[in-house]
Length: 48
Image 1: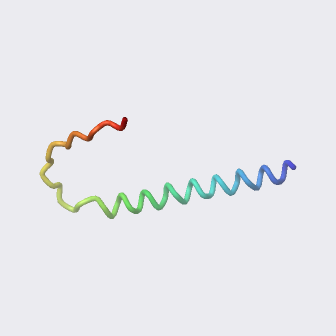
Image 2: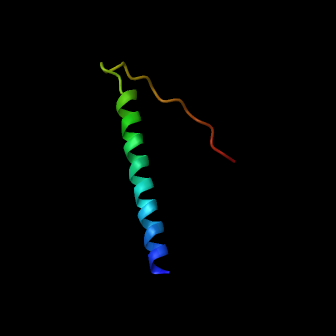
């Protein structure tokens, strides 16, 4: 039983690390080369 739990948590750790890595790559690609002019944030409606 212990080995199944350790395998599961090792798998989850690898998945979380991979998701963070891919998110970091996507964030690096989405960052513009030159800083753009900032525009004010839009007001979003609250969920009911």
